[in-house]
Amino acid sequence: MAPTQALAFSPADEGEELQRAELYGLLSRLWFAPPDAELLAQFAVAATQAPQPGAFLEEPWQQLVAAFRATTPEQARVEFESLFVGTGKAEILPYASYHLAGALNERPLVDLRQALVGLGLASAAPEGETEDHVAFIFEVMRYLIAGDDLAVCNLEQQRRFFRAQVQTWVGTGLCEAVEASAQARLYAALAQFTRAFVEVETQGFDLIE
Image (cartoon, rainbow, N blue to C red; front, side, top):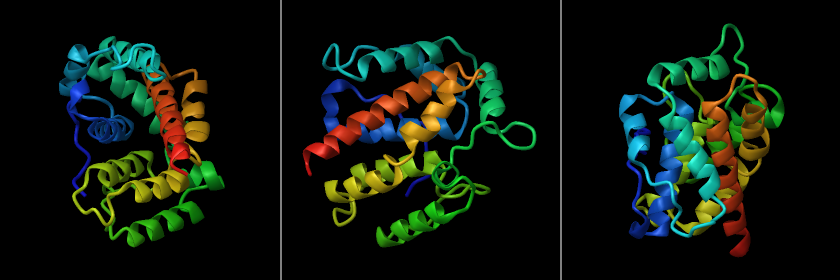
């Protein structure tokens, strides 16, 4: 898989699957590091109206765009570090093992690595990070939607990976923890949108089962 990159916002007419993939890529980028000036400039011109007015994601997307338009790279960096870096132990740990097992590097990480082997994917976690970081997991979902290997990049593999690696903890664990933090403003908006997006994806996979 290619390293996580800042992705451009997809126009509404490019297709639902491309939009899904780009949303996963964008979320991966935002959860991995604070936005730089280039990414904030994209938010400055991003559309705020959903393709279907009143759609479930429209309000949280508008709030996300507004929050990123109202911040600076320095403000974003300070908030990111206060939440996810800290001094000693960070306030919030964006790792599946922590939210599912109560500690880092536990069984959920082992299970994820086994799932990646089953998909034929070598670890591409950034140096110093483990594969159960939410940004890496979102990047895998982006690949499963947009990749060229149809034996791996198909709806059934998306469904299995999402059920096991996203649905189990991202919305009810990570996002709720961020939204509850007194230090979160920009990332509270990101958590709210992420949780809503996970709910939409969950409902979508429900329909095909």
